Image (tube, rainbow over the protein chains, first blue to last red):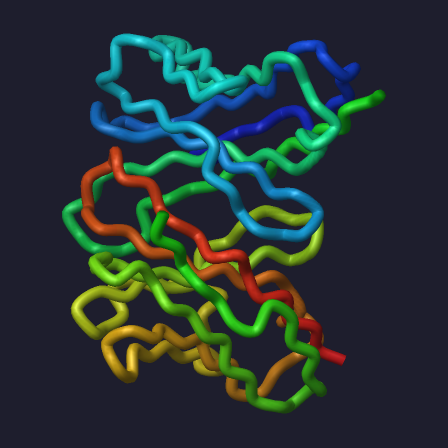
Length: 117
Length: 115
């Protein structure tokens, strides 16, 4: 089973509008972290926001907020007041704790967001 | 804010040649990783490195690949004999702790083009 599922390959949003990028995850571990990264056309991976599985409140970072619905295992990213510079690829990711030191980080396939002027 | 630094940002190489991709992780981080992203596709795990040895590797990380931490600061990925399908963006990442609330800090990537 996929650890992270992003079902929207591409999204369009009007400048200044809000947009929600969907992400669902799969884990049996009670302790995990959820992350969103932005990847502009230049290719670098930019950390946006983090949500811990035990956090009671939804995470917010400026115009980014994470709509965390634990029972549904979803962690949607909401971008408010979209700007042209928000056009990029967005990746949802999850980190699971493990007893070894190997890979714990899983990425979704990404959503390409285009902001229309 | 501390950064993971990768060099070069773009490397073009001929098929069959060896390449070394370099990374300087954040100085107090203990766990190091290489990921790759073929153009337009998802980010794939290659290898993790801890305490001067590989702790996990994926199926992609075959005998053509190797990693090294030669001097306590650099973390390198070597591809011995590049193939066309090795063309991808390669990301180095590091993290301080095993706890799940610590994200990985990614470098800006090296875009490898094999011709």
